[in-house]
Figure (cartoon, one colour):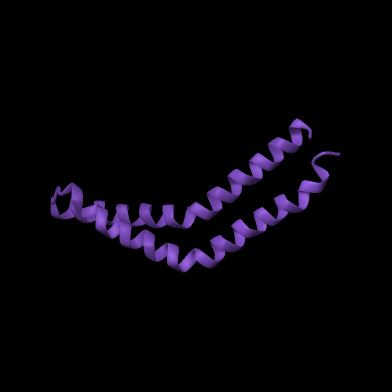
Length: 89
């Protein structure tokens, strides 16, 4: 097992993790931005106002993207398992 091989697997793992987490992070960012603009426009400075919409938005996004996330994670794990026989050579 060469260092390049390990770095390649680690890079692919990080890319897969970021791709799987991106939809929820983008949803939380968008909801937070909209609520921040609303708070700035109305001068309501309630810190707890952002939590519930973000939680609901992330949960709905997770429900929508769950099949895609599962497909990406499964494809990564299958590729890792397929490479196992060649690791010791």
